[in-house]
Image (cartoon, rainbow, N blue to C red):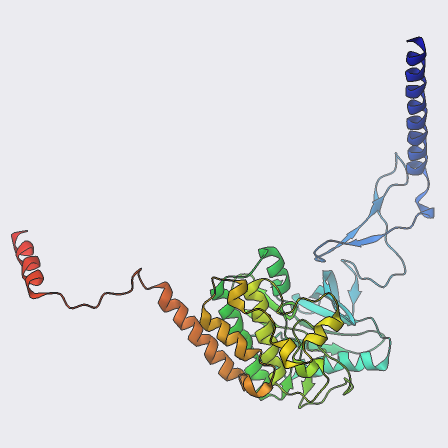
Length: 379
């Protein structure tokens, strides 16, 4: 019995010694000079703003903001040209996009900065995007302001208050409402109508490149980094350009393509919005590209109404045509696609306002009419 008590006492003494050691180590760390410590800048989870880690010199010192003197990331309060940085909005393959204030006009803008200049080719793509946006003016396409070239290459554009549809899908934890999907499709098709009239092919229509404005639910198309003007651009002919989950078979197979790749990608985007999942679910990019390599594999995808049983059969037929393997079997113009979506919306509105059992247009019997008249007279 005494031996057991002695062992227990020794065990708790050891625990106390270890705890005391950890406490001393922690105290020494907190009292150490911060000059030997590396201050860190962190992004918030939604990349909406920078958070700067604050560290203390000691228990009697006030907490102060530590910033890196040499850093590639911009934080709130930094300047680039005439623009004062507010926060980080997002980032792409070649750079980052920041929310900023134009100090000349006090207007809120978005600034896209080229940072990853690994080759002249990357710079050409960035400048191609600015060149395309310079000549565009449409309510469903982001508005371009100005390009700056120097030590840093960047351009400013309209800042849209809203979320891209990729985040919207994540927040919704599933498919979006059918009426909203049709509205998104119609607005995007209008943007494509205008683009194709200007000789521009976007080539990367996807949820992440469509922003839904918060209050108005206006859809805005962004990111023209791999776009083509009259079929020409900085991308090599043998390069696979686009996002595998939404690209057309022509893009996946690096064969001749035209504006109908945008029609396919919009169909694929609407598939995702209406089902909550991409049309093809593969673990690797190679697997996705293989799905797009032959008509048999391509057409093996699940129909939208098998994934989401609340969707009408007519919408499934629309998606089937928009995502046809052969471009000749798709909608041939964005106008034709928009009109098909408008017909679906009209049909939906009619169904929604029809009472259960439909409207009754049966002519009443003469005896029933006379009975109703007599009752009215009595009243």
